[in-house]
Length: 359
Ligand SMILES: C=C1C[C@]23C[C@@]1(O)CC[C@H]2[C@@]12CC[C@H](O)[C@@](C)(C(=O)O1)[C@H]2[C@@H]3C(=O)O
Ligand SMILES: O=C(O)CCC(=O)C(=O)O
Ligand SMILES: [Fe+2]
Image (tube, rainbow, N blue to C red):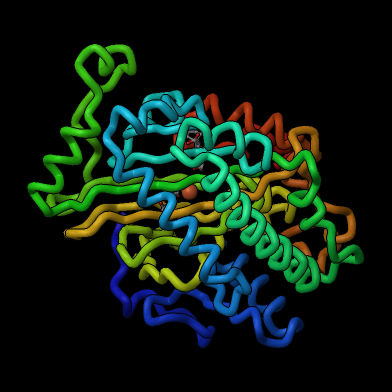
């Protein structure tokens, strides 16, 4: 795959940043932003939102708690692990041998689990769980607003058809904080590896096979290419680069970081809900010549485990579903998709398992 240069990235006359990422200002008129969001979901499965309404204070507090956690000695961080899949993880992603150059915490996004898990994460668990809850609620509201705008843009009768899925009290959403080491600061890197590398005994137990994957000589894979399985992902990072998205024509597009704004990813479930009109965006994180640590926070908005993921009949008419009227996927529940997701590798494509045979 080729890393695109800025010139190859500009398409049409869409409102974009210098690097071609569609940007939607949520303070604009609803009809305009809903149309732009639908277009961005079709063209990229990815966009940036400005004037998102999430208070800076909520973001700053979450960032402070996360920085505090990752700066602890590894022995303390391990009390919150290993990630199975929730908890503290280091270099291992999922259960099937995927590796990345990062450490992370993966949390269930509901208040009860957050409060339980906080006890292993922080010396002041009630503050951590309160701060994480505030953050999760704020980004969940943002995700609901975006899903309502999508419904508006697709002209569905029920404007809450998608947002209801993730606001359900049984929703299975999760929250992840990733922490990537810098690539080029030798001392820092040494300290990072010293702190993070599992012992030889643990390496054997975890079936670790170094070295970590690379792309070219001056970069290392932080988080390998994949699509997110949920409906929507809401990402916020510090000002360190590394995130890349894959365009429909196969170019890796670097996404300039913007700590003040949020990035939104279409997930596999949204692809199925729109009968393939939207496609989930492949993305990855590549550590490149940076002296700084990247830290990103992702809210993965998912429905309840028993919720059916199927394209609503209202949007199955030809004017809205772009390709054809027939269902690409047979109906499945989020729980069924999740089971497939965890049986596969990071880069695998999961929706193929639910394709209708006539396709
Ligand atoms: C290798 C894996 C990790 C993952 C579950 C999987 O089997 C395949 C998808 C991975 C992913 C990517 C997006 C999110 O970060 C995540 C939490 C998810 O829902 O799917 C991770 C899973 C994980 O790290 O547990
Ligand atoms: O850390 C990032 O910037 C993105 C990570 C990601 O894609 C994920 O955790 O699913
Ligand atoms: Fe992702």
